[in-house]
Length: 435
Image 1: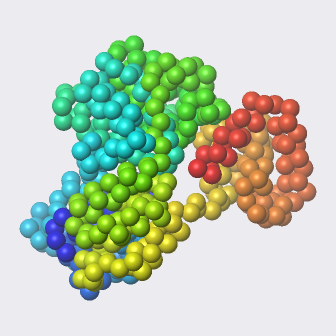
Image 2: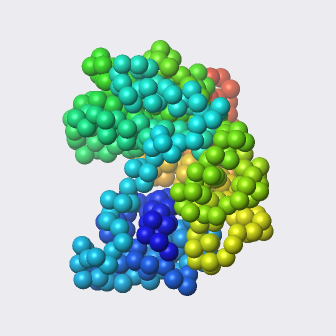
Image 3: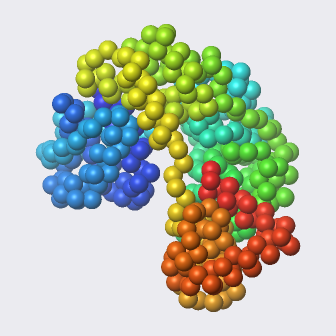
């Protein structure tokens, strides 16, 4: 496998394993791993510390191998070896090569009828931050290219205006950073981080909806930046008017700027995406195979790129020509992988915890303050709505008996029937979980 293709495979593996490994765990243990070679379905990784090698093998090797399978579709095993130094020439790439964000540019964004206006707006903002379209609000379903556009803007602005401070993050990260700063007493550092930037790019803004403290903080951040004529760009899975629990003040500010949607790609755009990715990865796809992939995967550009990446790994490892049957198998895997993960009690508690600023431990505890009790009751109600768990099983999760669960669910249902504002909050929690 050549340098570019191995580096690309490793970048994809790293991105996939981030879904399972915490940010701290990744930065401490995984980032120092470097790909050396891949032969006979064995990926050889190097690391300069025997101690780190042991930790990775004990705690992360299975996760990395699972990510290998997810990315390549092949049963690849991992062998970790210790090298002489962290700067050894045996490494094919430096850690900075693993910055996935740097791969997203306007040049490799395929423009079609479904995204042409959004692309033009983003390019205009990147060429003239704070001069046109401020704020810029981009919305569309998952996997249609919103994050690509945001990262392309970040890279373009940083290249053209090296003195400008650009901050890119997701709405959920903004919420988590706020909670952490409050708990650690570092709210001033939080303000310094977000209110002194020249360009704020926030992905998936819908995740702050319904979270009162987060929305208040974002509103103040927005005002501080806007008054200083700083650029603000956000994305969402829906337009502002459809985010039910979004603060009205925030909604009105979004709607005062430019709103643009990114729709699922049409056939020609899908073909263009496949052509571009297969050329980048040196995957020999003829027109018939390209058209077949474009006809099968219609809604999601990320899935199109995923198929091509798996085909690249297949060709490199097996040294075989691609056939329709091989592609059909990879498409089935991609479609099955894209099915939503089951909604668990833990995931529900996480979302309720963030929305009401009540810790998970308090929700599971026996504490009975009104705020904690209410968050606990809401959690039981949503668990009943979104899972197939019986009243008894729900009760076990919260250390309650089934009659208490039944009473709680009926109580919350009556409350929601009478209180539209609370119903909006619950609806948004459910939508975030399902999305």
